[in-house]
Length: 176
Image (cartoon, rainbow, N blue to C red):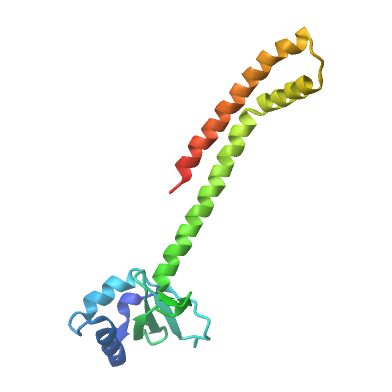
């Protein structure tokens, strides 16, 4: 949700001065610069109380526009260098990139877990059989029947091992 009627907005003299001081935008360049910026304006939710008609919007490049939504004016603009982390300033854009990367990582883990679960469900019978045979072999006596179980145990092991290899391979699919 961007700024409604943004192309109809006019700018104040103060806005012109700030755009020049802070971003080196001359008055003749201003219409083109603003038209590029308004395409990415999104509401900026700051912790300070805002006057209802004066709203802050932020661009994808981290520039905050303070706008009068009643009179359709751009009041001022400045770079969003207002977050301090570990003693250094971070722009809102940098923070958004970090949040995006965290979200991608979270989704990656979610889908890797989902794929792992599906793979384990597909070999559930082999896992159960593997476990049951292992219990019989560990608790059983030395006999011809138990000796024959060893080859079945090895077959189940290979089925489970193949599933684990697929899970390991898929883990690399989700790494960045």
